[in-house]
Structure formats: C-alpha cells, structure tokens
View 1 (cartoon, rainbow, N blue to C red):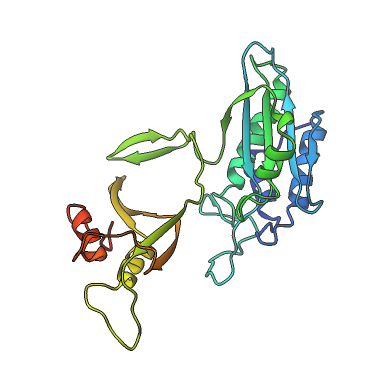
View 2 (cartoon, rainbow, N blue to C red; view 1 turned 30 degrees about the vertical axis):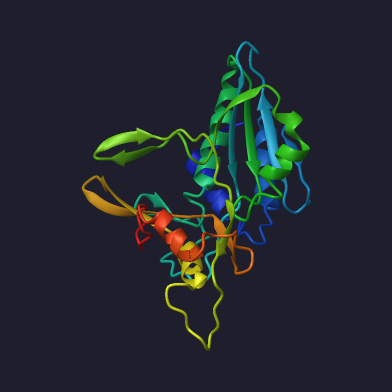
Length: 283
C-alpha cells in the first residue's frame, strides 16, 4: 500500500470534529486504525467508553535496547465564540499552510508520529528496541478516558518502553535567537494548599483596622502571574505563567495558639513575614 503524506493524514484528522467536551473521538481513532491495518500492522483499541477509545500499536525491534513510545491525543478544544477566517474542521490548505482546529494541538503531531511508524514498518528495518505508537482520547479535559485509563488499567501494554516523545519535545523554541529543544520530564498537576489564618474576627457592620484576616485571604487567592520576554526572530512575546494551584483558606479566631501577653497574633504574623517580598500583581 502507498503511505499517505503526513499533510494528507493531517487533513483527514482535522475533518473529524473531536471537540472535547464531548470528544466523540471514535471515528478519528478508527481512521488511524485503518491506516495501520492496511499496512499489515496489528493495532489494539482499548476503551473505557466505546465512543472515546484509545489506540496502541507496537512495531517490534531487536530487543537489545529499551522501547520508544510516540504518543499524542486526538481531541481538540472548542471553537465556540471564535472568529475563524476558514472553517475550522475543513482542513483547508491556503497560502502554503494547512488550517484547522488541531493543526498544532495536536493532530499534526499525530500525523507525524503515525507516518514515522508506517515508514519504519514499510522499510523492513528492525530498530534496536520496540517502537510504540499511542493515540489517546480526552487529553483536553483531564485524560480520565485516555492517558489515565491506559496507565491505571493497561500499564502492561507499555512493557519495555523506557523513552517517550509526546506533545512537548523534539521541536525548537527560539530564546535570544538560539534554538532550544525542550525535554519534558513531567506533566502539570493541581496543587492543593490549605492555609489557616489566625486572628481576631470581624463583621461587615463593624470594620476593623489592622486585624482583618480577610485581607490575607484576598492575597492568597490572587493568582500570581509571571511575565517574561523572549525574542523570537525579532519579535517579542509575553509568556504568562499562572499558578495552577488553588487555596482553600480558613480564618479562625478561637483556634489561635496562646501568644505572649499584650501581643496581637496578626501583628506577630506581620512581624515574622516583614522580611519577605510582598505579593504584587506581577509575582
């Protein structure tokens, strides 16, 4: 069989509306399955929900080195309320570029990965280790039906794989005019923080000066935003890093530990933290 060009595969992938939620990635995954079956490979479909399946295929190697896994997701974020100059699910080529939802995140990655697997298999070359290709559903909404399900319920399918290339890694970023190739060692996770603020209570009808824990709560709940400027071929762009963690806070009046006579608990807290850099809109 002739292997479609990566751009042709990408066009087909974009034409599957896999907006998550609700996802409905089944038709897109079945298209990838057909490409692999037509190439005499044996992909495996694994699903917690039949409409939201995942696909895994393994190209055997010599077994003298650990395996390499190529993995990505086929779902995309919504286009609702967005002004598109082209239909987002038509996969049009215009001005030498392919346009559509998922063209970057990350159906282009899926197209490149499956093209590499098909080319490797067609060449007859046996790599030193197995090469695995994994396409998952539900990445854009937490991964419960996709990566999490695969790891928690079918980890044995990844046996022998030590290295992986996913959505981040392998492509260059330009920092100060120099190419930087990213290596991803982890994935973002929520960070839950519980803070107890001790001090005298207040009342909406009786304002209190220099003693209202609510001021501290407001500062804790303010998400810090970091600003960095990196030149990219002469253009400057802002990189905004926003705290993902959420703070569950409690203001307690009676739970404060005993303080020395004449000492205001909140004043003591301020004294202890006076040497720290205060929060600002740009922290």
